[in-house]
Length: 335
Image 1 (cartoon, one colour):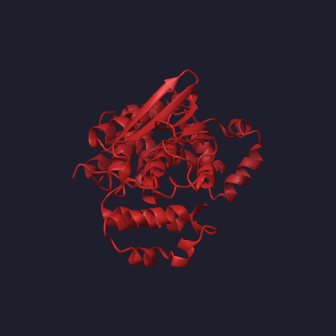
Image 2 (cartoon, rainbow, N blue to C red):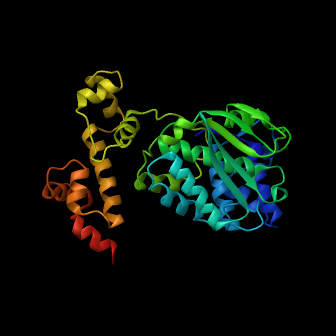
Image 3 (cartoon, rainbow, N blue to C red):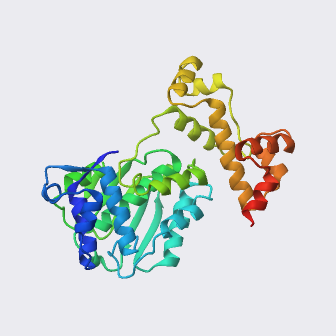
């Protein structure tokens, strides 16, 4: 995992200090020494910052980390993500996420606007003075940029970012976190990016999301990039489809889509501990479970959407994946 500037570790600890919580046990728990925290020349491992955020969330019982008038109970972001992931485009996912927080809190307001070829995501805090140093302003913006990038499996390249305060001492770290043109002392905080990202479909399943949330905020505080292994590239390719029935190209055609030979792709997948049949099975399993849990799709329709010629073939495959038939699986979930 990437390293993080110690400015952010100090800022997170100050969230607890403002609430009257002694940070010595927190430092011990996360193995952050006073010497390391005091240094502006050293950086902390991303794992430590992740632990620090998790510890602070739990200690304060507040996902807003004490930087708003009212706390946000742990689990709210996960609930929002599970709800929003069900929609068909990044634009719908973001709009649903914004609507979710609109219903939940008045402490912050978000807005997604398309302006021709650009899209803007604006975030405003009702009481910015509750966030001295603007740590949570930057953290919340980072969360939404990283989450949006993760949803579509592609790094969203930013055009510009706007901050409603003066250029801070850690502006070089901000440039590293948000590599684009920076604007300070503006009326509102927002990021702009190409609007065509908004039409892209999510390439993540609910199972992917469970892993993502379990590791959170590890994947939210580091700089996102394109998927760099072929297992993830193939998952993205197969899930990034608009047609109703899942299409899995033959292996030769799959290799051609990556401009490599089938032998090279097979060798690369083997080195990653994976194979094309395994990847297809995992995707079909994840999609099957999601459709079954929605309780609105018949088993025969699920079988057809996943490319099975008949329900019996799907049921046999499902039992191989989960050790029970679709009907048995649904019965267990309803207990």
